[in-house]
Image (tube, rainbow, N blue to C red; front, side, top):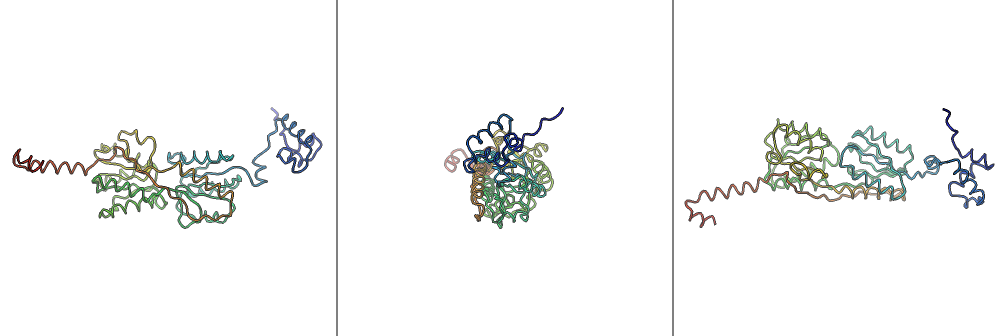
Length: 368
């Protein structure tokens, strides 16, 4: 079947006996500026409507260097952590009359570089990037370049680009302190992708909390190399063989914690009766697990809102050099995944004191 001819500006111009430039200006809302008569403008619009003509907004935008489109690159589109961030950036773009192109770098720096190039080729006016976070060499050109870039979640302290992230150090310290206050001393640390800012900041927070309690960090309890569920599963299986005396786990992501729970279950271990767990990231399902999980909640909605605001600030003032970024506080969501060894030890001591009293009257006098 023969395809109908493509409707172009030239076809409209030929039918009306005017120039392509005049047609373009009439359809682009620039008739008054270029003194095109109302009669000609209306004729162009009427013919375009009758021919069901739709201008190629991307091509026109590329010519004008304004496509009303921004890009977003995230490392794992399947990770629930990024869902709220993506939603807020999409909402922020739409509220400003912009479209959003989303790329998944699959936690690969090579894919990240390709995604940035693809978005530049599509003429986006700015990019929000959740970087893989292992190196920043390919991002240095954005410091002084003409394409605004904002980092979210993962960042590079030495890079002069705006960013927004959680206070990973403080959140990890609070989570570890919570476990310590519950009487746990052998706390396994399930890492994410080593070398990234969230992982390194959380690891520092974990170590600092142990140090503050006079407990040296045991490197044999620190393992992992992925923020994914499979990473949590494999790492937990490994630690159950190499350091089986841990009583608690601090998982650096919600997916890691799910992998850890699967590994524990396969070994016949229960949460929190046998092993306690605290996880970074708070997802809706955390409250509905068999043992509702205590988590470190990150302000993902606010992260997305601030990231898109910073990006449009740069789009409006592309030559403005931004120093530093925004670190947002986290919140510990206490649920039922941690066994309170401290209170159990206290009650055990109280029972021991009572049992040591020689008779009923003496117990009442000495033990109250």
